[in-house]
Amino acid sequence: MPASPLDLLQKLTDELGFTALQWKLFEATYTDETQDLLRRAAPGFFQVVNLALQRDIFAALARLTDPAKTGPHENVSLNGLVDALAVSLPAGTDSRRVDEIRTRLAALQTKAEPIRAFRMKVGAHTDVEHGLGQRRVAKVSRAVVREVLADAAAVVEGVAGLLPGDRVRRPLDVRYQGGAERLLRLLKKAMADDTEPLANE
Image (cartoon, rainbow, N blue to C red; front, side, top):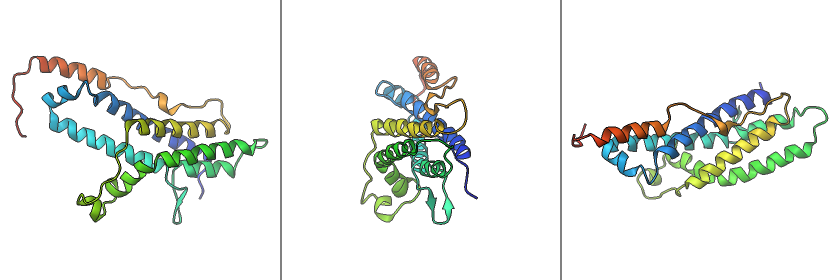
């Protein structure tokens, strides 16, 4: 049974909001200024968290930009959302507004290609050439991730503006308590008194 645009909008807004939260935590934790602190405190731990966050964020952004369908199965994706919107537009809606959203989504798909390549070649599937290091996927800059998040949010908010309801949620405005900044402050204080040498665990 095809999903309604309202159901897809709710799910995608939640997914995008959580991915934005993960990205905020990643960017706040892993900076040029924190490298030395993390290396002195628990390098192995923070390296694993770094890689785990990157993989999860890339996988989530790749899912968001999946096609509307894979074989007979409908995907919870931005393409699916826009397709669902197009066939159930509220009466009197100018269809050109949907065309504008599709244009933005097409630009997002292009920007997200390096992230999707990572998901397909490293994150979710590993072919021999990439798995054995004979070929590498292109690096994805932080600027690209920020742009993809911003463009995905613009698509979600554009769809929300065309559906019934009096409130457009802003998925990138997610807030949290006790985040990376507090952790880093506490870690810095702890390391000021630390005399224990690093050891393999």
